[in-house]
Length: 74
Image (cartoon, rainbow, N blue to C red):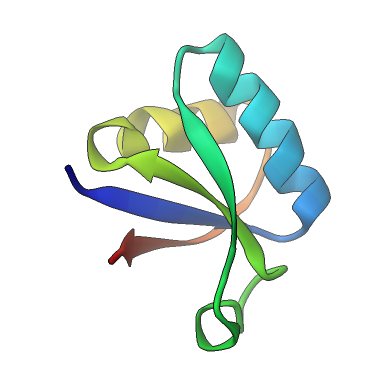
């Protein structure tokens, strides 16, 4: 199964998004990013299934939670 990491501007927004995703039925897990992957964000992101990324992005936009980047998770 493939996953993506959604990077937010702060750990606060990542945790807020995680709660909203949970209510929407999107499973996610808070991840500490390696230094080279966190240059554009807070150093934390949410790991979500690749199949849930589009829905998570739409939910984030609806809730006005800015996504900094979306990375493939290996």
